[in-house]
Image (cartoon, rainbow, N blue to C red; front, side, top):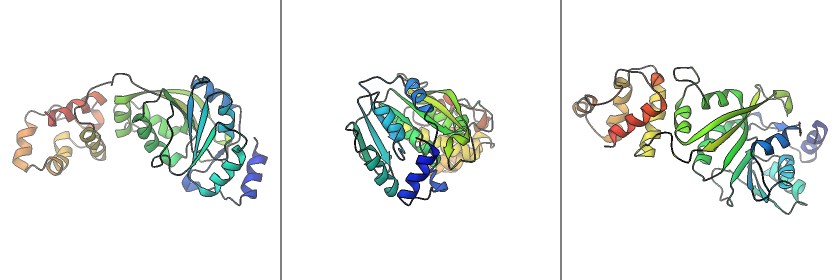
Length: 272
């Protein structure tokens, strides 16, 4: 696989890479064995390659595991993917949105997904009982997953992911390893689902909705930031909210100052 091959495939299938859809194709195969090693790939593994492109990564992986599920949303690229992988009996091509399409069971994920898909894909994977996910993601996105409390990168994603998983930075991928070259460099990271959650939440949906809301008001005092959310979500009036507030932890702090486990305790206080 080379830049020349990528360009030839784009020409053959009349494909123009869509920047908005994050269609940047890796042109450095030296990263493939690294990805397999980081995922500790063995012959019994079933691997999901989300955003498989022309299938070069899938072809490498299928020689090191039981099977690969190669998912591609773009119909033109999916057509090329089928042709490129037709000789590999243990590669299953799935055309469609990886978040919405029915998929066979898989236990590991190794992928360089489109950047626009990153946050939704990570949350999607946390709902599956997988051994690990090794992903190439935009550097700025990776920083959000492991951000320190109070930093600019600290976000709702940091909080929600930390409750369910651990995240490790493994390697650096320069932007010129892709064609077309994206605007930013990338990071290889490994996500592993925690066997025991970092902290317990009684109502996951409420917790996640609350955290996302609070980070839209990250600099307000918690008492002010929470009021419209709690009034609408729990259908309470101002007096009832003020009564709740009396026993609420952290109400004088700001969302950006709270540790992930503090958000859990806060959500649980509303679900008692």
